[in-house]
Image 1: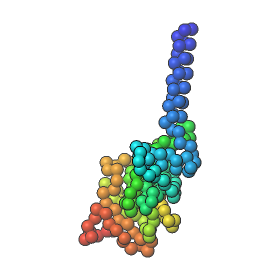
Image 2: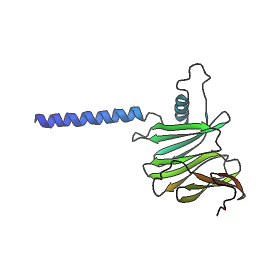
Image 3: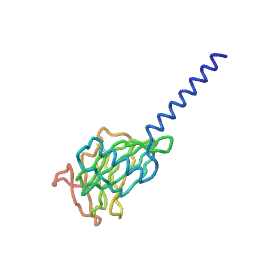
Image 4: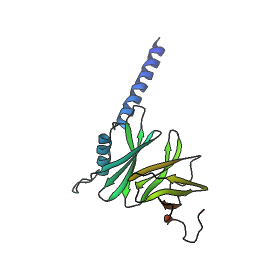
Length: 186
């Protein structure tokens, strides 16, 4: 009888510990205001005598258990990647911002591996990404800001594309990254 009670106490303690850990780790509510506050708090950590950074969320998109948040910070564009826990709340995985035209990378979800790109549209119609041996086109859409993604068959060795071509809405080539001007694109 003592062994049964002891085993039951251990199971209950582990369950309570798991629930507590989940509620502390995944503490951001599922609202744009809560996510905005969490990202700003993340960006302002360690800033003592500087003006606090404030962001404007422009777009969000859910990809499996991830929420991708596209925001602006002054004249810069940023992306935050949040993970959803079993309690329905989020935690910040990573945040980055800067003057890069396109913010892109591989993301791991509970539903597989994806390649995502996000940014301000600025005449972009589609992006052709070369990731290892794979080549795929990512349509951008008609909005001022975009988040687009593509499901990968397997996790690549690199976390970002080594080569990319950006096409305008009229199909013309706008820019190449990692590809010489002489190379023929098919």
